[in-house]
Length: 299
Image (cartoon, rainbow, N blue to C red; front, side, top):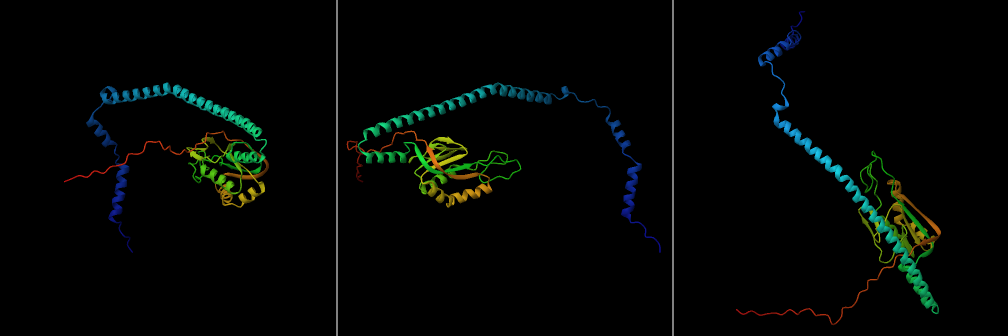
């Protein structure tokens, strides 16, 4: 049996490999260099547009850096000034709130002295002032604490309503505080405070930016909600509510802090007195609105 001759494709591949090994390309490169001749390297002066562009870019960077460094102290000064003004305003609000509470206490003492002969009316006024938040409330009750979860790691997945991993989680909002407050009212609470801010019939719990506002006073985590009333009834009703069940679930899923405890004695501060807004009947001497008149046109 005679061996089969190699195919034409195999012979061509072998010839290419032999040419690559034996016939290098160096002579070709050398011949092309001789034809081109010696070319000196190009200098910056040969490319004026590129040189001018580099100078302009460098000048722009220097000016920007200079302006940034020059404005940094001024920006820091403005920031510090704003922080000082905010803190001064907060101290003034605290001072005025304490003064208002002292005046309310003095007014209550004078009222009790004037109504010493009418015990029924005095008790009714005491209850009305308690419900309106005008006097401090002391008694047994329930304390509920909501706490934001700890800072998440960069590899942790994002949570419910929270920011990207690595940022400070913001899960609890005004809706969470309102849901707990409304549940405590429904469970029989007589007085409620959020982070020592007393709630009144006109109180509002809002969300502005990343801050929870209670009557325009910012409150931060942990949110401590205290309710005065029958402690056993409050604890039993709140523990069996859908609100408590929801936050127990969120505590396991999102890592928020949720806890409620009974207390034999809680003290809720009085709310600063605000001027009531009273509606008035319009006076009969007011200028009446003009009566429209109809005009007939003839054709």
